[in-house]
Length: 428
Image (cartoon, rainbow, N blue to C red):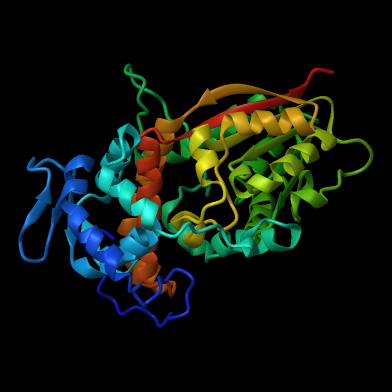
């Protein structure tokens, strides 16, 4: 967490899903190998590592990001046994900190892309290959549980760090002469509205459009589409989001044009005869899961009328990275988004080509804008530590989510992740 954490006592939450195992893996050999590898790894990764005895390992450059170890042996054993999962769990447990966590993770990510340090490769080969638990596969019965794991946290939590639109996906900011996003907190809500308008424009949503939205969020896109004169059917698996989206539609005076349904995408049925003129989705695809991308796109293909269009905003990763991680357990999968996987554009193209009549057109990428969005969310989240405590979410939860936001921001800042607008249509 930030260096100015709340000192309020944490509520009892020993069984909370965000708490890492209190039993540190024994892994004596792997722990010793990690200890020996720390200095060369730090040098190769471009960081400094401060030990409790005052020694600093790694890059001698004082500008290099600094990682402070509070319990080195615990970190060594967790990382030695579990790799990146153990690294994250060690942070959750407070065994290490960083003066600037995002800078640390961005630097590490940048160097890993160029060439993984040999000590990292040695340890990776010795660590057990951990597959994703079968129980988290997004089958029809499990998908709702996976969604609610994240999205049915108290709505007040999301209100603390999202803007007034309650939009939980990448914003699109104005850009400067150098092409970089001009992002500040005051402009976040307008940047989210800009993103929504681009998706609606891409799908050609206007008066009379029969629109399907997969993944409701808290209703901002559905309300914006209804204000354009569209008839909106939006579906979600989150009880909290369903309730709040209905409230927001009523408050905006468009409840007669917005139908919010608690529904799996596999169970969508159009209102009346025919299908939808347009389908829009903002960052729902990542939660579908690799095994079910064909089902998802086949559903869109089935529901679109001839000449219909689908506008999809999705986070993407490089195709080789997606192939390497699609079956592996990861820290994000274990603690933040069970059942999900970030797709690659080639994977989307392949799923549509093999299982649908849809063509995929790339309509814009906004990776730096997501890094900026996440920075603003992280800063707002950190400022509200006391309010997070008051919701019954303890210090370990705050550390877990600080790492999640910083880790995600670093992925976009280092270019490991991107976010794209994709247009899906049919030739006939």
